Length: 162
Length: 416
Image (cartoon, rainbow over all chains, first blue to last red; front, side, top):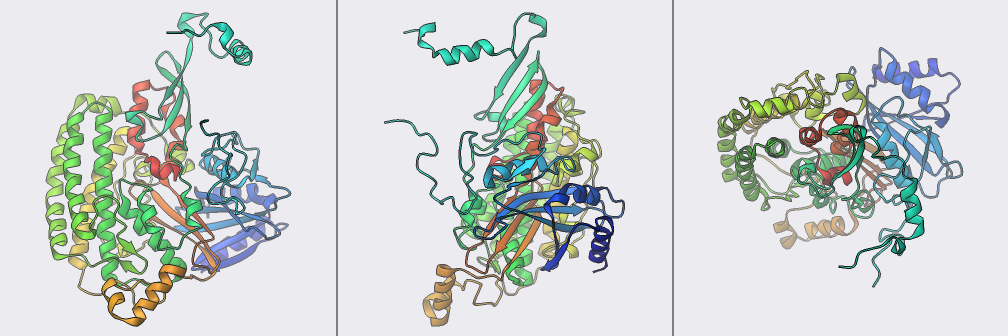
């Protein structure tokens, strides 16, 4: 428990103007942050000598379909020093569907952000190479959005003519 | 044969061809070339496509292209119950399907808060370690084949065949097992299967040494790999390496030790670490891990005691088939679970295990329904392929093949 307090205290001390929402489920600490502070907070968590979250395990997003802030971008980061996994979350609205990239902090998030962009259409600002990764470049939709049907959209991928 | 003339080509294409200033042949000694490698290439371990920019035979740039095997498993997971998804996890890392099964059920159990009987946990550990051995044997064999040593592939596959025979007895399928269930495993491990496991574990050390003796003193093998595709400790962490590839770069990180799951905290095993970070180190780590996995299985066989193999939670654990046909309540529960699924509480969990390629994690978001609201697969191969441009830079084309073999990607997992 002490570890979780340490992280929350450190974050609140270093980012007094940012609002944090702490929650816990199944012994996993997750922190909701404002998307404006994603880059500096990630950089701080990686470089602080007491925390050292060196490993970015995963970057993904959740589509809540009808909620006001439609998307939540989720980062799973791991500290090898503390053997501790932290979940960072930032809400992104559909009208301003963009968030800062963290690929300058962890190189691995480059492709993970590309995947999130491909699947959800969330743009990552200052990303070095924001292209689609699984779907073809000319594909117009984002398959993991809840309004994309499971069977696909007829005519969205060019098929051979009869 | 009719030849195309200039008039047949669309003027737009002609214009584009004339505009292309990247590739020139003015100076024959300084020309660069773009080489397309894959997606149908025997050495890329599936449908991985690489675009290489070559100067002579030296790679000066590389762009990996994935997605040729994208089946949308994350989208499918959102539309099926937690039970229905188990067979689909087999198709992710198809060389070690059982560790994917274990990873999936552990994530679901964490979400639903299900405690699993100890015997089932030991059985899961045994099958997951056997899967790791199978995966590493294929990795070593195909890696050796990529650099020209064909015999090793046949010998390691002979060993893997024995594991497949064990799986055949254990769960009735050799390749796509779907053996685990939420709350336990499909059936108890039969004495014959466990006897075969024991025999296999006793023999693997000698048999692996036999395979290694073909490689470890082989000058061609060593010289093609030593110092090729080096990645430093810092870069490896920054690129998100996990599993054998990270340990070959000198980081002692293993999720079985760092965040113990199942019964790994009761087991005594060593984490092989090499500091060189080159292709050879990655091969050595895998070979050592096979022996460590054998040690783990041996201890599991000793620690295992008879007992239940499924949690006694009728609302979320499927009953045995024989009881469904003879008892009313079991029939009702079976009907409810199959048709409506288990409904875990609202929440989000991430659970990762040390899969055979690296950290295999599932991120599940539940809204209290029978199917997940979101499922994200954190596949190690996808992350490892990302670092290929960094690894192959400055090496020869033939080294590219060795480097791909050494990081051991599986496209079923990378493309989901």
